[in-house]
Image (cartoon, rainbow, N blue to C red; front, side, top):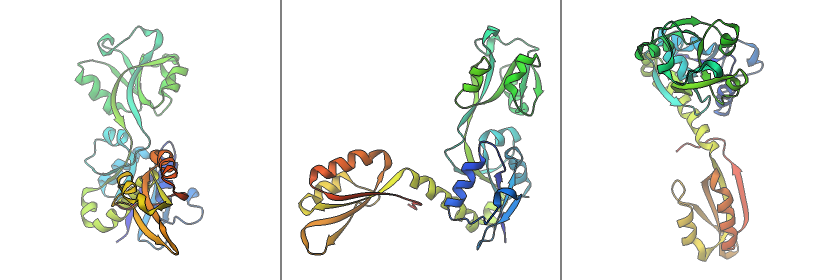
Length: 287
């Protein structure tokens, strides 16, 4: 039974989402970037390219089994989906922003009747209702930052990452509604009925993400330093140690280390008298 997976067709989530699938070993074939859907080679998987904001609804309806989209889009859609994996990219905040010259410092300063431009009308409505603020929600499809300048709205609710776009448009954040990142979500029925296929994709993508923070370290180390090496590199199950042909005083050590620790690890090994030190990238790491 074919597993159908949705991926954002453009925007801030598209490139990284496709990269993760390709590095996971899914072969999308030639010219996938010009097609609306592709059949993965040698796998009973179909990848469909649609708008990120449509993915929650498609997954909830069962038209799609699993999909990659932002937590902001899921919250806005209000669909009951099963989150399968945090993808650690596409980080942003859904924030309330006001013109710098507005004099508004916090939510309490917002007056009833204030006009709010946003492409997240449902979340904005719920947020202001929770604060007992009666505002007019103006649904826009994009470029909310320009709306106060045009006089269309008084404030905005929009996604913020670095904040540079707000600064350019002389806006400032006064509070955050939610934080968001890209995730894999699934239709609850499909997750159960297609368990093996779903787990296969989720575990493959997870292995790519884990591998990105690791390096494979190899070195020839003095045999009398093995205890020290084992204390320094506990690794996933301790370092792998192998004899070197014709050498009784040295052994070969292989270990997985955190990328952030590579600099110190190499220098420490050098001080122990190790040589032939080599670090390699890891494509996938399955714990």
